[in-house]
Image (tube, rainbow over all chains, first blue to last red; front, side, top):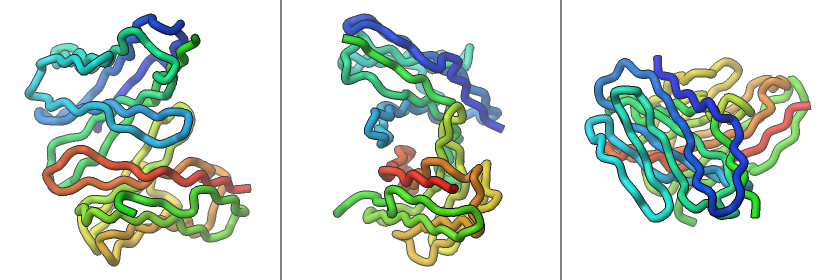
Length: 117
Length: 112
């Protein structure tokens, strides 16, 4: 069985501070995908990033960066210089690379980020 | 409109009533999914479908029924709604070989 744990339920920061969201996962699959989704107050789910389990290269995209460490089963996400518009719930998710099973996602419980002006 | 749509967006029903939530996608994606979102649980998979007429259970299927007679539609039916089924329901789809999943806007269901 797969499991995704986001230990932080809520993080509150002041604008321009950096925010790091933790994600720890469990899976028996050797090949899998990890995702981050953002859910703003309007309620829709916005895809942010997907990483393959065989690609541990970390990435920076604008104010977002990701730290994938297979050895510790962690896939952390950082927002640099946070802005009020970053206020949202962020979900980490995992899926196995099994074509016949589709892309069934296992989600963490989410971390609510509140950025205060 | 292109994309994935859900209807209704909001629904209030009474315990014991049958409710059907609709999901429609215009991309002809092979895979479709239903998730429910509850505080503290994130999103949990209810049912999914790999193609028309092929469906399978997810993590929390009890009390729900699905069908998929056409590729573009994937309705979710609560045969006898219970208060524990009060939730936000998301439909999603992805194409074969593409692991980015696209989500609908969600349906907020309240069972009184």
